[in-house]
Length: 56
Ligand SMILES: [Zn+2]
Image 1 (cartoon, rainbow, N blue to C red):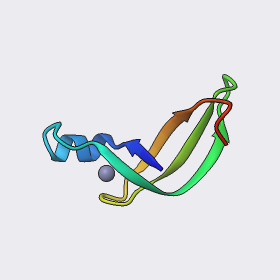
Image 2: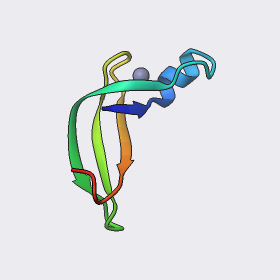
Image 3: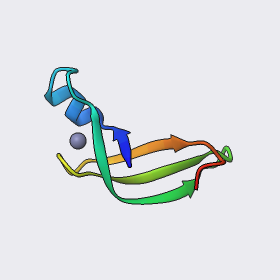
Image 4: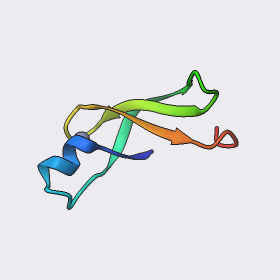
């Protein structure tokens, strides 16, 4: 899964920000929205991606 990584975005001065997420797991937030939670394969930072409820 590809997700936005703010750390990679900063490191590359805005040139690269979409990174592969490893160990992705789906969580439901307090507001009922679903998100994928995982780790950036490039820098190791924890990252989130909001997903539509229809996505598994
Ligand atoms: Zn990263």
